Amino acid sequence: MHRRNAAEALEIALADTPVVLLQGARQVGKTTLVQTLQEGAPPRRALTLDDGAVLSAAQRDPEGFISAITGPCSIDEVQRAPELFRVIKASVDRDRTPGRFLLTGSANVMLLPNLSESLAGRVELIPLWPLSQGEFEGVRERFIDRVFERETPDWRAATKRARPIVDRMIRGGFPEAAARVDTARREAWFAAYAETTLRREVRELSGVEGLADLPRLLAVLAARAGGLLNVADVSRALGMPQSTTRRYIALLEATFLAVMIPAWSTNRSTRLAKSAKVLIADSGLACYLVGANADRLAEDGPARGAMIENFIAMEILKQRGWSRVKPAIHHFRSSAGAEVDLVLEDRAGRVVGIEIKSSRSVGADAFRGLRALRELAGKNFVRGIVLHDGTETVRFDPTLMAVPHSAVWSGV
Image 1 (cartoon, rainbow, N blue to C red):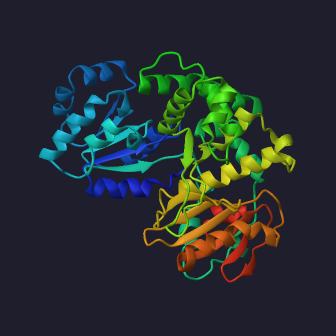
Image 2 (cartoon, one colour):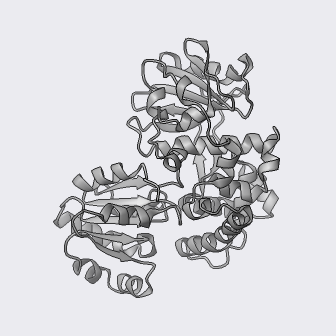
Image 3 (cartoon, rainbow, N blue to C red):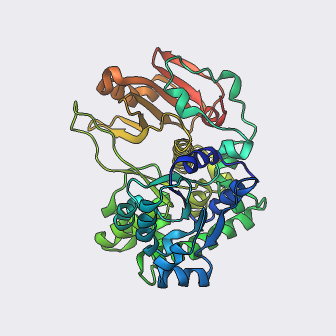
């Protein structure tokens, strides 16, 4: 069993917040993490809405269901009975004892207005993504926090790769899939996940039957991973109205399978791309959807570049859940074509640019987008980093440097 780096944040939240919601896609390990926290802790009643009888009771009489709970409890897959949110709100307004309700959910309540409004100011949200590379190796990654430090981090002693990046991408981070050593069996898991779990989860969330196009839509988005989201283009590829495409994309985002990275902008420039960049939350699922096996990813082609960008970007996004800085994460693209894959911006407005390359060497041209970002950000620019598939850390000027991919999960 892997120690989850979100565990500490979850424990801290339970110590001072009446309602804590651990949310992430199906099969990422939410229930396992909750069970782990119960070991050696005061007893907490555990309920799951995946149990038909429990779900029926919660839906039929939410007030009675919650009032019958005495002491701290955990409720698994709470999005299946949205009626509970209103009742939990009323209950914690009467009794704000920290840690009363530990909820888990496979839907992002912040993207569901009726649910997010119910617990505003009363709940702390803890994200749980598929396993990070550090979690596989028993390391708490600090890359996000390190890149905001005043002194330039030194990753030279911590960038030896024990496992090739292609293997890491194909494995993905869903615990059950990652445990399957045989490639065919892992792909069978992804196939079942995309066809069965996806349809079930989204159908319950939307109340819409069918949704046969969702696996196809996820595959189309995977083929565009790391690129700007063009809804018109996706709609044409699927033969689907744009209004339907937008609604289905929102459902994939709400169930933590697709991730939208918004565009970064500043008052100094209005001529920037406004489209979001699309990522697939799990690299193993993304590789499966586009048919990118080890042989194909070993070639330095478009598929390799897109999958590496998706993989590294998601590894950084996962770390935001336990980082001290917790920056906003954006992408940057100017009208002149200068791009930066990730822009991290802290609450003070300080900016770090991250460019992700699949090559093993980096030239001066790789910093074009970072230089454009530096000019716009001005004094708020902390540093720009080009992540590459080599092993050397090289400084190009006082604020620009090339760093190996493995620095992201080194723990240094």
